Amino acid sequence: MLGKLVPWKKRNGRGDITVRPEEDFGLSQFRDEFNSLWDRFWDDWRGGLADWNGGNWFRGVNLNEEEKEFVLHAELPGFEPDDIDIKVSGNMLTVRAEHKDEGNGKNGSRYQRYGSFFESFSLPSGVEADNIDARYHSGVLEVHLPKSKDYETKRIPVTAA
Image (cartoon, rainbow, N blue to C red; front, side, top):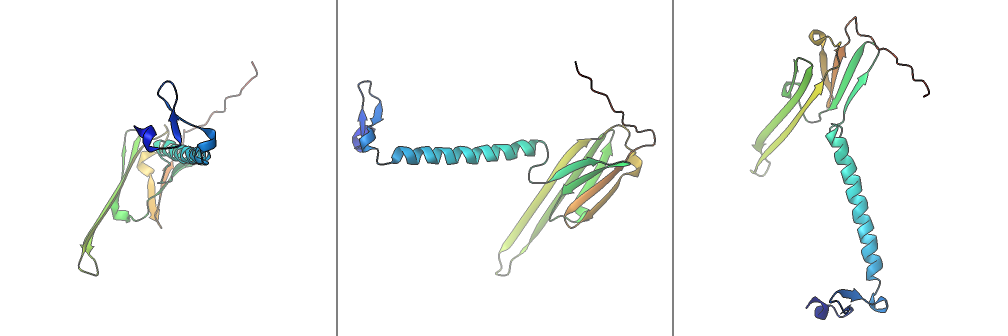
């Protein structure tokens, strides 16, 4: 039935709809370019989701090791310091932020905004949990995790096999 509605398509002997090259009107090239564009879009999006699974998508969370401490940076725009809750339990550091804002607009309409963030991190052994320091400025949370005195990094030599 579809073949009757689309005049440039014909059925072959097996009942499949085919397009004759002389009646294509450039549609196959358009379809190929569109499919390529669509595939590139989803490949880029999936790459972003892969980063998100690692905690780095949209929220910019990084944990860096420095000489005497680990430093966690988390981008949390729109929050206030009172909205952020940081807890240490065992070797887990949990950062949670939640913000609710309700009010009336200029024309009498009501608005409601909500934002949340939740992330847990396994702390490396040798972090002094009692001396963790957190600062929040211009939408960026910075958590300093000092290393204990006996924390030591050991370099492992690699030899050719």
